[in-house]
Image (cartoon, rainbow, N blue to C red; front, side, top):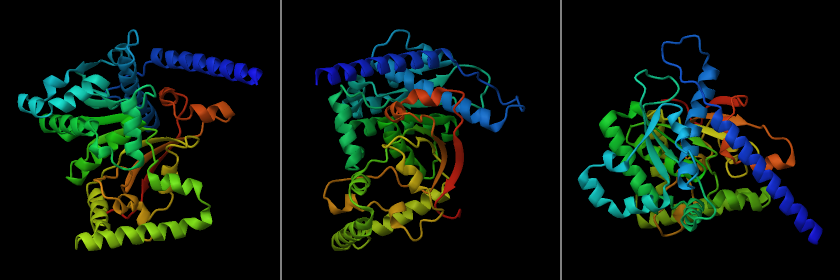
Length: 362
């Protein structure tokens, strides 16, 4: 038994050192910013460079939170600067959302970045909001992950302040100049806020690494036999629709269909970066597997929140996406690193890029 423990600790130590080495290598490998005037740059190179730029900004937020040395180099090497939230929000907003601001100050979930170069870039927008993912040592991060499962991330102070900041940037600079990016938990809350804006016909560009598809119903479906899935679906949808009809005449089911149509009309295409080996996000691949949502309500209606009685909001239901998929790691250790952000910073990992649509364009 002692030998197994020693072997396990040794493997964990070697893997952590390997991860640190690969992360350090990714930090030194700075993507080259290319201006709009360079027509020779092919589309695939542009996509990979853009992905690496946004990934670096998110890593900078991780390292800032963990007080790593020289964390600013993640963004200064690409001519971005970190802008204080106080300079983004008005005095009225700072006072109104002071509790949420203190919450963000304690947890350092996200940062606002401004491109400082005078030359416009095809690789990234001038204003970027980058959001880190889960730190397992933070109780609040674990609480927010539970909110993802129960589709109640909208109740978090993180969502409150992020929504205010992104809306203020859009109001000041226009939605064409603003983008949102995040990893894991950061991808979830970024999707939630961008989905809200898209419903208001304001499609902000979003780049989301390993976005979790881990709400309660998806987790249950992983555990029950496939032959029982149709029965569980019928029970959930039946309870949800009965509750909606009894409580209000305009059912949640119909509202979900209208939201799905509005998102399609807004032409909102979030960029999703999904590793096929990552069990937390790879269900997005099945979600976008079929080209129509007409015969599958699960594509636009989440039944689980509507059989409970607290306020919920789904972030994973939308009709269009730019889906970048990789299946890089073949060995067993690769299954444990599939959720790492550093994989997306490698220039030699192009992945499969697809423009996926669940319903026909309006």
